[in-house]
Image 1 (cartoon, one colour):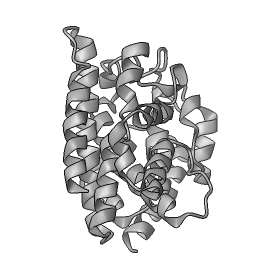
Image 2 (tube, rainbow, N blue to C red):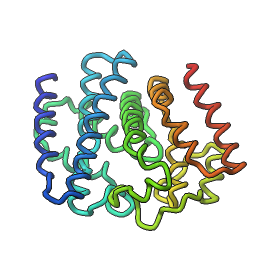
Image 3 (cartoon, helix red, strand yellow):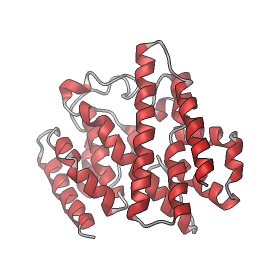
Image 4 (cartoon, rainbow, N blue to C red):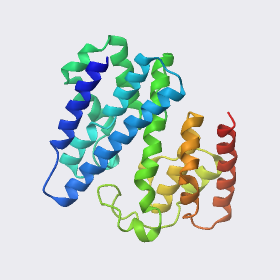
Length: 261
């Protein structure tokens, strides 16, 4: 499969470059996703090592990381945004691209089904129910690998001062308030996943990122998140509120439990 993977990397490199633009803002968005693709692919490789996956399955994880956001480039070209709620589900767009690529036909039918399932579910609130344990495993791998890098991507925009500088293609219009919506606070305190499509403020956006920690599947990923200081940086930029403090306390307890596994 290594030779196939090499061809896939070459194709993906050329595909991403085909969206380069003389428009500085457009180019900025494409480069962000190009860099993100590289980091997520690397995260999948490292996570596969941690999980001691077979050589075949490690390469399958690499394929999933490489193509998980292939739909983003078409999405941005057409809609000038990475916000699915304001355009199309980028995972579904990715599947359309993948279905048209002949070299995916070189995978076994089972592997191709696993790849598509993982990519389709990498950005959903929860993974679709299935009795196929391999599908669930690879969906968890890409979800962890993706979230780990999104923390890096969004780190510069945590403070209210810097969020005003956030590229328009990342944020939604009119969502700059530092406050947290009451329903998001309630989700945070009760440990329930918040719906990113209902984000109304910058405070909501931070809560969603913290709530992702309840959906981290492997200690390796959680350890990386903690070591890089992502949690403390987000918490340090939250509004001071007793209910929010309750949510933070509950969250820290969960993080410690995962790290202890």
